[in-house]
Length: 220
Image (cartoon, rainbow, N blue to C red; front, top):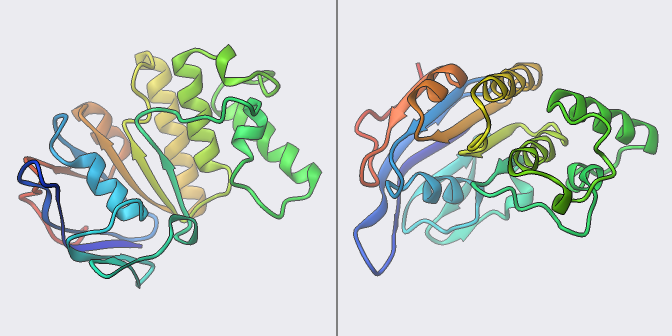
């Protein structure tokens, strides 16, 4: 479960990027946040991931206080998988090595099985030995998605993860996300500016405007 209460972040050059936002995402549930560029969606995800410290409010992860203005639990201790707006793949690692970067404790056979499974899910079978420089933009995005899914996290934060994918491929990747969400009983926060995408992937859609989400409260 992820819960945010009165979450706020401001930067010196303007109004609050995130302005007293509150909502809950129970385990096994999904919420999409829909809004135009610059409305605060990415900053909100970074606050929930532990990459930014809030100026007010709290972030709870599985009932534990993960962030407040005085303290931030490091991202790697939150059991969160995250995909950023840019794929951010390690250029010196192969596709397979990138996917397994955040996976620890798996035996070699299990690691190879998981990688093969994910490559098939993202429709990049046989490309595990390629490097990021040998991939298209859409392929890199899919590898970033597989890397986030690889450790089977309890929480997924996805920031415009499927930009530049053609329509059919995008819907298939949304199906992959939904299947993994269901299998792991994870909670998903999906940020997008595409209303159809938001409705396909989530149980509930929240509209963000100028740092605020007018419809706030627990997920029904």
